[in-house]
Image (cartoon, rainbow, N blue to C red; front, side):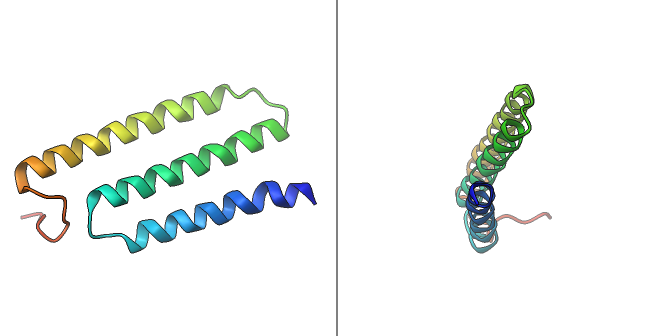
Length: 96
């Protein structure tokens, strides 16, 4: 019974994070925040899984390192987009 609670809450949080990511496609900042929420939920699920199997949590530290790099890259893209286009709307950003 307790195992169902360990996995149902993170799965619901992951699905809600995906829903927020898909529905908020107007601003880049809101998409980056929802991506960071998804990464934190994945870290939580990884931490539960590694503790359940009595493994070392060294891999979770590596996962956090890569998630910080992902966040810094997203913020640098946001800053460069605001500097070139003046806002973070996806409608004003075109590939051409």
